[in-house]
Length: 203
Image (cartoon, rainbow, N blue to C red; front, side, top):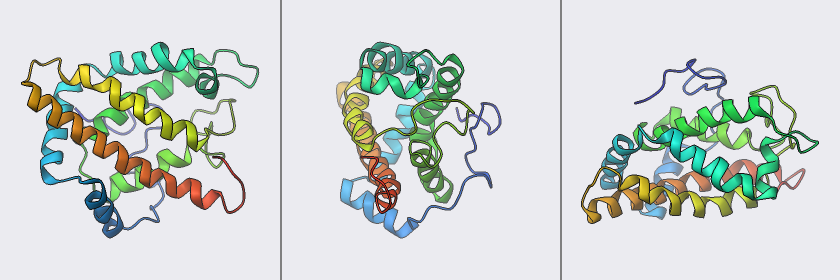
């Protein structure tokens, strides 16, 4: 199920609040070819979305409370500058984290989706971090932390994909589609960090 824009704080998918990505649709199609993302992957992602839609809260709790909270260099990005808990930030960003799972699986990879990839990346850099939730925290999330954590996202999603009891080959196909999508998204997010690197490094 896709959440309607406005049903959660600062979720602005497909609205005028989101800028146009400098990446063209043609370039995104080329990236799909580079990562091996096919029409079959689109179908398996939709199937993955059906399997995961009732599990997103549990998945994000696993990522945030079970993994990120135990890694200081990652946990600090949702805490205050004094390294204290920031419940408002965590609660609101967790909702968008859950929605990101659904957007990854169920949204068409069109101009709106491409634009929102740009917005997601911006919200992890000093250009927009903390603004959406009006909180104080670290000024940005280093790109190295984002890239490295993708491996965790990929590894830990597979048991949830198997929850519906589908045959192993179906689970493998859903997992492969997920991994290819995340590789595509990382490539898109890197554009923001590379542009920013012309004036400052947030690697």
